[in-house]
Every structure is written in structure tokens, then in C-alpha cells.
Length: 104
Length: 322
Image (cartoon, rainbow over all chains, first blue to last red; front, side, top):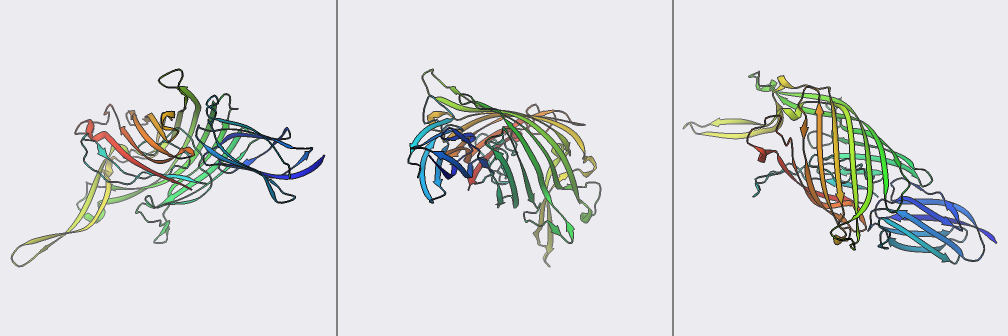
């Protein structure tokens, strides 16, 4: 197991409410100054094998977002995903996504 | 990123509905779908930054602070403008600001199944400058008086975002926002006065007696000065209901709203209305255009002449976000 420093950015085209991001089941605290762009400049995560990521956020259905995780130690982008709330018709006004990715 | 809303200004056009097409301007940092006067109970934070609103000749600055770990967030915003359409905050050595400085303090409930609530408090101080026509004097130079007024207000609001199925139980749920707000504060009675276009002419005569009239100035003023009052206490209740029909794939919103104002020494007025808005792709709460109609003082308690057609306002809305 090794500890890796990550930068996490959830960038909404519109306002995003109550974003919940977990890396390896650790909830990340994000800050925002407009409710659209939410970010955590640096967080250290102990990783063993794949990096498990969960993204949850709420917004009026159709609100697009981009989710990026960067390995700050190596300067590499480990996740770059886009989506929109309500893409799952059973979850209006919401996004709930899971990713398992190469941690480096 | 930043959103502001322009409601294009002061053009009246005759239309077949005999309504008035009023185009005016308003900045919408803290509100989303607005009525014809730029008011709403629904809060939609647009972000931080500096905006120059060209049609309103106003500069707005806003700031918002939120953490994902906390249900509370807060922000401030300020808007400065000049009455003459030029941002002259200092004129002839005198500070001459008009505008508004306010804060917002929000508590947001934990979302559940695509539904959540916001409660917010928004105190504000606004500075306004108005021209009044004095019909008691024959001296032209004294007929237009300027009144400056500093108003305070406190708004408390509840917003509920949810979704509902329209037309059929198998249909996709359409997002909705319900907003209810109550505001108390101080105001003037300008709304009860008559707005005049005061035009100044110079009349030239030649030797044959022919006259030529030159328009040398035009200004809008409320009349009469003798009936002007300020520091009147008031309360206002705004109710908005907005739906984003999924048939439009979140690119359109329909709003129904009402505005009820209760002011000291004035009769209560009720002004309902409705609007249709086109929204930005990927951001349903950012407006790119729309049309709003509202009937001001629906029961005509202020006895405005010429029937209800003169109290129907139709506003075009254009928005831009960055």
C-alpha cells in the first residue's frame, strides 16, 4: 500500500448541490466559491491496487459536469470523466457514478 | 463562472394583445427566473467575479463560500450603477452611488431522491436616486428635484427543488422549483406616483413668424413632488413555481409567479405573472432568453386610468453566462 496525493475537481456547467466524492471510501471535503466548480487542492489517499472512486452530486436534470482527478506526485491525470445529472431516468436531479481506475 | 441576466431596456412596442412590451434590465446574481421587475424568491447562485452590465451600466461584484462538508454557505454581492446610464459614482465632487449591497446566508437540506430544500436569509442595503416633478412651481429650473434614498431590507426564503411526472405516470420526471419568500424593509411611494417624460424645447422664430421647435432635453420624472414619501415600511411576499418539462430536455423552463406588496400608507397590491425561458445547454438554471408577462396591481387598487391593458407588462429576457 502506498499513499498518493491527489487533486480533485468537479466542474459543473451549472450549479451542483451537495457533492459527495469518496476515494477508497474516504470522503473528500470540497470547497467552492460559486457552487459550480468544487475542488480539493490536495488529499493524501492510501491506495492498494486500483483506486475506487464514487461521485455523487445533485442538480436540476441536464446539468453537465466534468470530474477530474490528478496524481499530484507525478502530475498525471488519472480520471477525466463527463456526465450530466438525470442521465439515469430513475435518478432525476442526481448523478451517482462509480469508477475503478489505475491510481497513478 | 458567472451568470447575469439582461432584460433589455425601456422600449415600448404596440402588440396585438394590447400589452406593453417593456424591455428593462436587471442583474441576477442571486436569482434565477425573474419577474418583469427583476424580482424572484428563487435563489440561484451564479458565482464570484466582476460583471459589467452594459444595458444597465452597472458593475456587480459577488462572492460565495461553500464547503461540501457543511450544509451552510454564505455570500455577498454588490451592484453599483448610475442613474444617467454612465457609471459616475463621483459626480461634481459628490459621491453619487446607486445600487445595492447585500449578503446571503443559506442552509441546504441533505438531498434525498432528487429533492432538497434551501432556506436563506438575505439582508441588503440599497441606494437609489430618483427625479421628481414639482408641479407647484413655474420656474423651469426648479421643476425637477432629485431625491436620494437609502433603503434596508431583509428577505427570508424557502426553495424546494423536486420533480414530478407530467401528463402520464410512465413519463420521465420533470424537475421543479418552488420558491416562497417574505421581505420586509423600507421603500418609497414612487410606485403610486405618475411617471412623466419631461421634454424641454427651445422655440426659434424667424422674421416671417415661422416657429421651429428644438428638443433640448428629455428626462423621466415621477409626479407630483408634493406627494412623494420615503422611509415607508413594507412587506412583500413572492411565490414562484418553475418547471423544466423533460420534453424540452432541460433546455426550457416555465414559471408562474405572484408578487404581493403591503406597504405603510399604501393599499396592498398583487401582481401575478408567467414566463417561458430558454436555458443554457448543460446548465438549466442559466437563462439565455425568454419572455415574461405580468399584470401589475391586478385589482387596480391605485386606480390607474385606461384599464388593465396599461398594467400588463411583457418583458423580453436575454441572459449570458461565463
